[in-house]
Image (cartoon, rainbow, N blue to C red; front, top):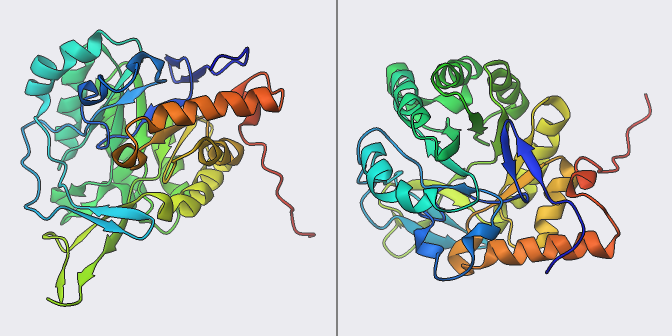
Length: 311
């Protein structure tokens, strides 16, 4: 479908032809989806999370279907930065959409080293910093739940990476706006939210957890209302673009996020159910803009009508 609407979005210095991105961990390294649709129609490609060394992840079972979603405890399995650059990046570099490398580490030093390594690869337009990982130097507390730790990680990445820095926020916090403000001050160009919500499922016959790791990350439609609410909260306080994630299956879902304040969105769990979900969402956004005579997708952003209480 083609319209005259302007779908373009810019996050930091990263320009995208439309606001539909893939969510890390749900799209592999993109090549897996190449036979299914034209990858060049995507606004941006966020690849599977990368660490300094190859990571085997957790033992199976690692995925459990739940009501309106799924739990995963993959354990951030990945090929490591060296194999990514050697084996995965050549294919990605031939595509038109900007490539964003999702990165994670166990220490601030690991994040910084990853950022420096990626900075040398001009085919990568940006990094998405996963701060939901445990800080081994602070007893395993996740970087993303502490404004100071989150600030320090992002500042270290910002100092070593010259292009767009996006920070992926954890919903497992008391006040997500405090984390958002902290990483913005540290130099983030954009914020993506939300990451998965910690959950658990039990086999009632064996009375054992269904995941070998006991707990996992809940994603899919079940978390969308939480994600929309958090995007709305963060968009009101942040001075940088917000990317909405969480349960987006249709264009209507994406448009909710735009109205709440997101400038772009990422499609995640839906890719497992419908490998063409990103294209269906994109086509639906274009149809919505055409139907409502809206010239730019940016005109939708933050247009929510909220009734305020009388003082």
